[in-house]
Length: 331
Image 1 (cartoon, rainbow, N blue to C red):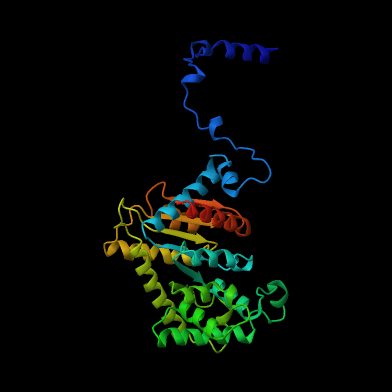
Image 2: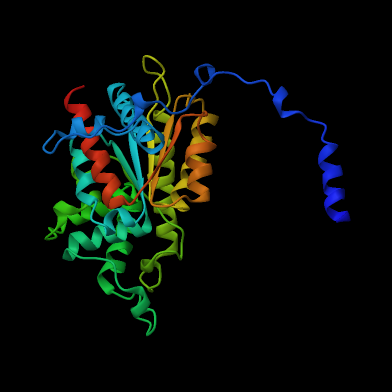
């Protein structure tokens, strides 16, 4: 009884009167969502462009459109569009998507980490790649195939001796070797088209570093040369085109190495006077990672010029390619 009385006394001592709240009409409020931006419901058999236009104008769909427009603007201004790729791009079968974008002149350069280059080579060599690590790690067979390591060791020497990028040396060697699936190789295609291809490795992170044939001095020199070539590419992305349009950098599936390499290349380019104020960056991956978020879409660019596309590569990259092809056809 006393407890109930105490509670009543407390309630009677309230100092605010909700009837005095200042209210206003919903028609005066600013809104983030309007029906004009809702998804359409196209009928069966519509064109891809019509389907793309039917996507709602929010979040991921809006970012996808922004990426498409940025890449289109970069190419119309004759600025580089660089794809920096991790191994899963090849492992999930998206090599042909990248190859087509290079052949169409939409992608002008590629950068890769060691895993991507390994899978690219093995696809060209035998039409298959990606061992079952959980199985082969148990008896020491993981990473012990002979041919891949030998090819990479020779490519490092060829790159250094002939002043080629490591990526270009690999691509040219794949082409010369007449591998049965060379047409599926991103690096061989880049070499054939004369597009820059760079390879960025951290010693000890790739299976090809495990065998005695690996020469650390050659690998290190080749990868350092490729970093300097990448600095050139980023420098050339600077805005000297009408309207101050820069190139576009897309990081696809590399969580550590390529975001770190890119950040340093941006610093070099800016230090030497490249105007990257309107640089556009994109990170495409199935989940968010710290380094791509910071080193690709936040730190290097002005607010609003870094875009994140979250989705599985095997869905997102064909979708992005088709959207780009449609846009370029009508540009």
